[in-house]
Amino acid sequence: EVQLVQSGAEVKKPGESLKISCKASGYNFTIYWIGWVRQMPGKGLEWMGIIYPDDSDIRYSPSFQGQVTISAGKTITTAYLQWSSLKASDTAMYYCARRIGTSPGFDYWGQGTLVTVSS
Amino acid sequence: SYELTQPPSVSVSPGQTARITCSGDVLPKQYAYWYQQKPGQAPKLVIYRDSERPSGIPERFSGSSSGTTVTLTISGVQAEDEADYYCQSADSSGTYPEVFGGGTKLTVL
Image 1 (cartoon, rainbow over the protein chains, first blue to last red):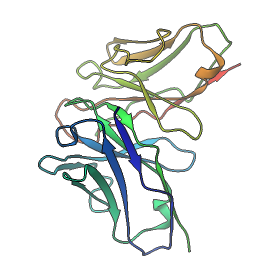
Image 2: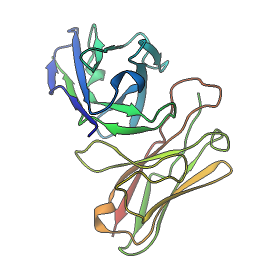
Image 3: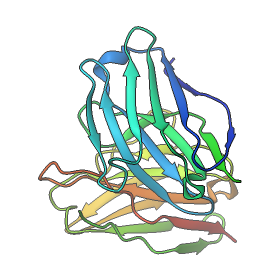
């Protein structure tokens, strides 16, 4: 059974760093793109970027390029999303999701990680 | 990048048919994907490649495509179908992001 299990909710202060995780199981992790999607409170879904774990090829949305870093650890079948300096506007739910092969759709989703940034 | 446009809301009575549209210039050339998101839950894929239904998705969910518009149809709507629905597609030039539509709130009256 394919599963994506994300790390727990985080409460941080502006300027702090953060790395959240997405642990995959039940399939060959290295050959499926994994993506990250942001959902701000009461808003829609925003595509942030994707990573191909086998060679760490990464594609960012221009809106998020330079604002976050996406990475993955092949041997531990885990993808990551990190910030070096959080802002209040980073407060949101973040989902990881597995891409359908080479297609843009996401067939399996993590449960989400709520990140709250407040002074 | 490009845009995908959805109506903010659609309302139907139980048992009726709900149609949710998604419009965009990329849609004649690229497949669309539809997601259902209920409050407090992660999105769930309900249609992929315009009209394919993943395993476990009820047959009342179907998708179609015509020109620059794709449509998610829910036949015989049930109360449990009340949710936000998002379309997604990609740009044929291979640029990113792979945009989501703004979402449609389906209300079952």
